Every structure is written in C-alpha cells, then in structure tokens.
Image 1: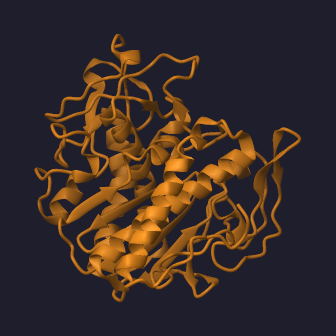
Image 2 (image 1 turned 30 degrees about the vertical axis):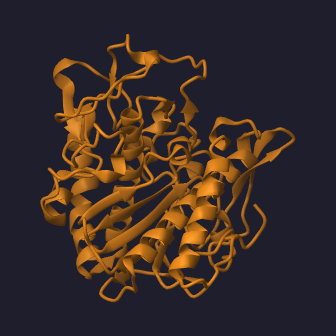
Length: 392
C-alpha cells in the first residue's frame, strides 16, 4: 500500500500556485455540493483512495464511514450527519457521505482494510478481546477514515482548502505510514449512535492528524502523524537544522507517557503503535524494541506512565464518563493533538507564515473555550491550561 516516495503529512491552501491540475472531489449519493471557483471548469474527478483520475466506467462510491458501520450502529444511513453540517440547507445523511473512487481501489480497500477490521471494531465496541494484529487492523481502518474524511470535508466546504492533490494526501499512502495512537473510553449516553467530529475545522483540514469517532457509547480519540511518538519510544525524528530538515537518530529509550504532552483522560485505555516502515526504506534506521524489522511498530498500552507491549487487549472494562464531559474532553484532546502536529510541522519544514499555522490562533481559542467548559462541568474544579511535559 506504500511505496518509496518520501512522505510529509501536510496540506496545501487553495490559493497556492501549484504545478498540478485542479481535480474535482465529487460527492456521491443524492448530495449536491458546489465546487470552488478555481475548479468549476475542470471535469477531472479524483479517486478518494488513490488520488488518480477516474475515467468513465471506472467510477464507484467510497464511504469514509462504511455502510456496514451504519447498520451496526443502528441503521443510521438515512440519519443526518450533524458533524458535516455545512449550512442550514446542506446537512447530508451518513449514507450520502461518499466520494468517487476507482472500482478496483474500492475493492482492494474493502479486502485489505475494511474486511480485516470489521470483527475487531465490533469486538471493541461490544467489550471483547482483540489480538494485537486485530488492533493493527483497527488502526489501519482509522487511518483510512481520517484521511478519507478530510477529503469528504474538503468537498463539503466547496474546496476552499485542498489537501495537496498529490499522492501523499490519499489513504493508499497514508495508511500505516505514520505513528498512531488511540484513546478509548465510554460515555453515559450513546445517542445518536454514530458520530464523527472536528472534520470541518480548518485546523484539521490543513493538518489532518486527529479525529474523534463514536460508535454507540464507545469513543475513540485517534491521532496519527509524522514522528508523533518519537519522544515516547526513543525513536529518531526530523529537525530543521541550518534551514533544512535533518534526521536525528533516536536512543531507543522509552520516555514516560507521550513524552511531549499528557493525556486529558488518563483513566482511558490508551494504545499506540510507532510506525517507521517508510523511514526504514529510506535508510533511516532506528533500533528500538518498539519496532519490528520492517519498521512496523508493535502495539503498546500506556499503564500509568509506562508503555507495556500487548499481544491482546481486553475492552470489557472501560471507564465511563458523563456524556457532556466525555465529549468536551475528546474535543480538547483532538484540538491539542492537532496543535502539537502543527508545531512539529513548523519545526521541521515551516515558517510562522506557513499555511498550516494560520489556523493556530483559532485552535488556541477553541482550546481555551473547551478548558473553561470542562472546568464548569467539573463544578469549577480547574484543569491545567498546558498539556505539555516539555516545551513545544
């Protein structure tokens, strides 16, 4: 699914003068969306899975949140997807949240990503036990949802922001390429039975690194990004030195917790998988017990402040939070992971004027509002404004 092309997880603004042909993300189902002025005159439709141009009979429809999940959550296909409300007149149903794809891409993703994840995701929601290979499959599936949802949101926003349109922007390159982690817990009210949020946030669209998915009463805060877990697992990372990105090998020593920030929901089940498959191919070798020889990471659970390797994981007992508090903390976690990813992007290949940093003030404002809301929900008991264990 991944070739040797170097990967940088960044997006591009619509206004940049880039050497590519604008492509049309065409929403499926009965949903009508308006294209931005910049691509109204083009008829090239892009596959949401591979990024390639679709011609004629090659077209199929890919649902970022698959139809089997609509049925499993309680036949929600025809219900409105409030997370993707664009205006008072455009609020698609879950079934309508689909984009064009190649038939072959859709078939391959169904076989390699969807099918292996179905049993794992259902077992997670139902409180079963998952092997580490099932957890790996669930992470692949969440990678695909995160990337495809970014394209779905871009289409619904009228293409004000374009996610690069290069191959690196699509799931066939992103799945399994970046470090990834999941923070998992339950909330007291599972209605509506399916939810996905922060997808229309400018911060997410320019740095699509973190989302929150809820299936019934199970909440998954999911984040994946370049070098996300470098500090936590003693792995190498890219740093800007003398104006260019330089790779600094890691010591292979695990750090407490995330190494960069602490979790707002420490009682949750926290799973992580560092991924260095791409960097192994490029000759950036990390020697760490967290990695397998091919660069794929083993799955770890955060117990207290220590990472413990897991070969199976029990979901029968998870902390349950009040729904409003659970939602607020999930939103806060998501925003803070996106902020951290943006700061890391700047440190490696950006400047303060970089497009992916332009949404930072709004994200910090959202974070302050969420902290105030969480404090109010906790009866005035304040929480720390800083989520960092080290400087940004």
